[in-house]
Image 1 (cartoon, rainbow, N blue to C red):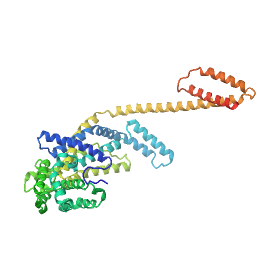
Image 2 (image 1 turned 180 degrees about the horizontal axis):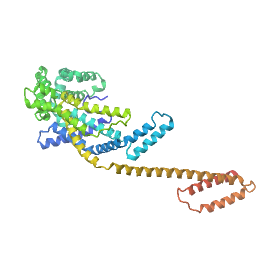
Image 3 (image 1 turned 120 degrees about the horizontal axis):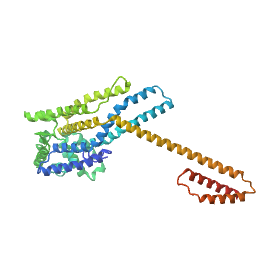
Image 4 (image 1 turned 90 degrees about the horizontal axis):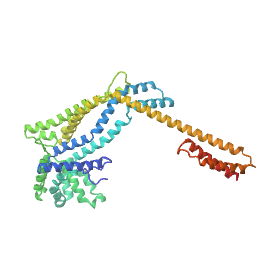
Length: 451
């Protein structure tokens, strides 16, 4: 079990990828800090990071879209084959169905699992990027350092258990409750201070502006002279998170409700969920869509219909999530959708220029060549097998037909014959060479049995 709640992700595959992305995000943040002379911005870092990741995945995206284009082209042929063997469940029919389906895939030069493989590569990367953005302090040193003053005071001055009670209002006490349970685990007692620091940073990273104000004005915090440290951390985070006048650490809903009548903040807060929905919708419209027709079977039409419904619902879901989650995540979704949409425009132009018929013809030639090579290899194998069998039968026949009294002379003759055959050079790996080896082996065995 990971001793840290929301720090670095340790999820299988996603955790190591998130760590690598954390190094990249940390580098981007330091670069922005150097360029802006100490005024690095979380929102800009998110946009740059999203751009770098999506550009790195561009080749995979192109291959995926190319596969989708070819799949739309070949689906009518696949459906004809499926209709041909519809209702037939015997072994021969299923084998023919699979064989004919493979031939169609080979004809179009795609793999049945081609799209899945690309998604399996892309999805962990995107989930890992989400983890880095969701828990910035775990991966970005400058942001983590902003918490040092208040967290050191909570752990070393006030004490862990009392500090946990003070922070119980943040995240509805869920993290603190989990943290309190972990304190009873002996595995964490040897490193409890470090564990507590990470947990408190995780909790405070979810704190809204009102949560920070409550913390600053808390009587225990004040009596231990930690209000200044809390206010310093809040100000540092506000500067990091200030994007177009909006604190992207707060949700748009919170910013609207606590805007104090500032029209600019309300406009930016409302724009985030709206833009998230619109960019998501645009991205979906630009993606290649599966074609539906009366010629398709019910399953294919049902799947296509479900995808259309999902494509309609996704923008509304994006708007809702971006309204209630921290605005930084909404900014990430918008940046990702915009970058994907721009990519898709160029990819569509590239795909439209492809001569699908020429690609199919080329793949058909490759498939024919592979079939010929496979047939030739199979024929050579059968011929070799027949030659070996014939050589074996011949040597056995000669051995059995030699009189017992003449065994010595036959052996001498065989030896003389073998020595002359040994002088003959055969091409390595040829049928003749293999037959000769079998002949010599059998002759040797016959001589041994005779003696």
